[in-house]
Image (cartoon, rainbow over all chains, first blue to last red; front, side):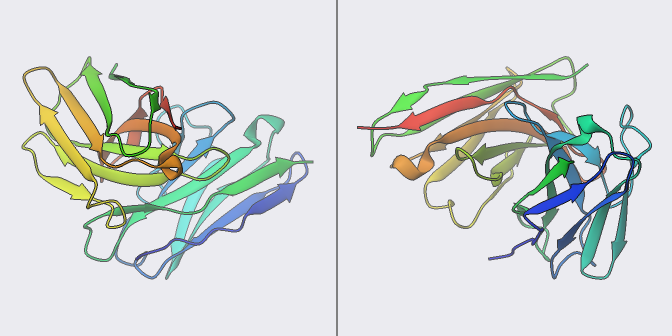
Length: 108
Length: 117
């Protein structure tokens, strides 16, 4: 079955830049999406179609894609950005969706 | 704006069938895929499956043999059934709206389902 691979954890100090990667063989063919989840809350979409930022999401959130890896970048990290982040995409045929294992972002 | 409200039984015994429903308020029901996602305690998100307003479905291959997702367009609702549940199915279950253009941009509040004898 298709898998998306994320690092389990990323740590940064406030004001620094956090980069969270997501790797998968089908990513050159399928869009990726990023979600932020805080404890006890439903996930929140922060990036769609690799790099588009939904309305209401701060400009410090951006996304990029290169080959089989997509990256979520948070510039000027704030304490409120501490959360779990998940990438989501589809298998190569577009038949089913998959989530990455999630990355816990810690703001030191 | 669009809101999803979900409900269903929160405590099941092993071998029973999980049943959840999600209602769509304040927006169009057509043109989207309506999805179910779950999250075991302390773990990551798992996509279960999706359905569109016409009834076309896609399922996670690992759950396909036990999952049925259906739609009631007259009520703007869609439902999840998961048969033969075990303790491993204990999770928070979410419904969500998906499009390729916007991703899963609207989510339900989540329903905690516990499977225990």
